[in-house]
Image (tube, rainbow, N blue to C red; front, side):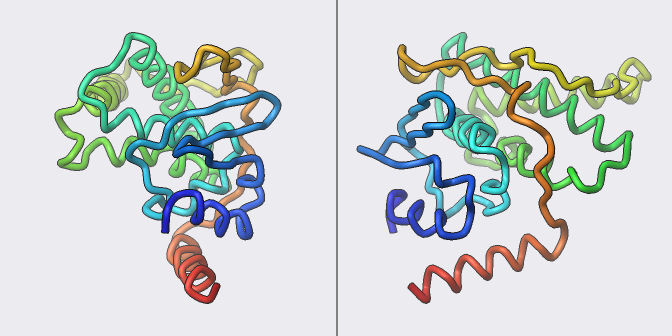
Length: 204
């Protein structure tokens, strides 16, 4: 099943995917603004379905990072985007851990899908993975040394990642407006979600 067909199946399950479509192997999001990127490597059917509980913009950004993992070289803008994404992810992760925000643990986990993938053998030596791993290592070292005090997360409207370098006419994606209130079940919910989607698609 190709990405376009699979997206249509997923849209019957995940409301946030109603804003997406696929045309000519490109993923398009119309959600306040227009966003588009080619799906060169990512197969939607292989993604953790918990990803699709995130906000539409967060889904788009995670998939974009996953695409960057495959690249053998990155533009300066692509590197900056990964750094901005990781700064947002690490700050939110620290906040959730230090404040015992259990209801947002799976939100952070879903945002961290590219982080986990960066440690897979196929990506280990690619530049996107190296940036992610370096930032994780530096962050961990700061915590161990006491320099990182896991600062309180302050939600603002400031742009964390201020560009999306796919096409010239794209508007900016604003992490500050993406929100951090998605509630996703933990533990067994992952397995049950996968089983439900599989049975739904097979049954249709």
